[in-house]
Image (cartoon, rainbow, N blue to C red; front, side, top):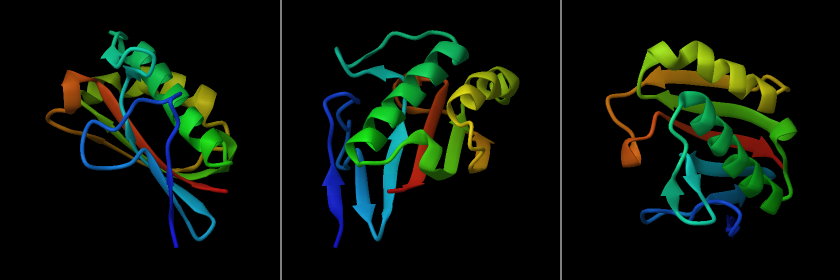
Length: 124
């Protein structure tokens, strides 16, 4: 049986999905973009600022699920421009110090025109 996770400290889902689900000792978090949960807007402009907001959103969801960034086992990262790869990694590395398994791909476009989206799977 799975449990739906919701926290007001991360952005509300902008479609028919949940922030995360917990199942069999893992939390599966939906992709997060750089929405400020306080006002629902994308305020960050640079890849560094957006990555930081994304990581804060993920951390809030994981905390609500009784997990943490240290317990992340897999991430999937989507960049709108692979030219941002190094700058993205600089910020990402400050949050994901446990070096989880990861996929990182460039995509044509992301919701709300953002530069980055990240989803995670973490242990509880």
